[in-house]
Image (tube, rainbow, N blue to C red):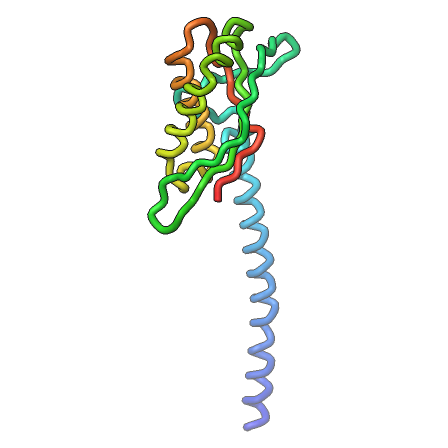
Length: 167
């Protein structure tokens, strides 16, 4: 009789292993279908980063017809930024694209004023604000607005960071 109970326990327990394997396969398939559905139905989430713009940032679509304005390089500078836990700084250099040649001449004459505006604006940013893409795009928009506020002949069309390190 004891032998009979051992056989039924062994044969009764043998159905658990295939059930576990089948359950795992079904779980993996459902997970795959869920992920595929998410990516197929949320195409907006997969747009290129250029489509994401900060408020006030002019969105420029690059085509063959896009005119490139005169460029002015701003030399590298280092700025301490706001941080609660320790000292952080930004080391950056950038290039400003202007609307016309008159703007380039004026910007060259106003370079100390331009550098001052950049340093003051950057110095009031926090370490956390400058870590992500949205923060950098917001910084560009604020810089364009600040520099254009004192330019009279031309305007800054776009800003390109040629070097940007936050540490």
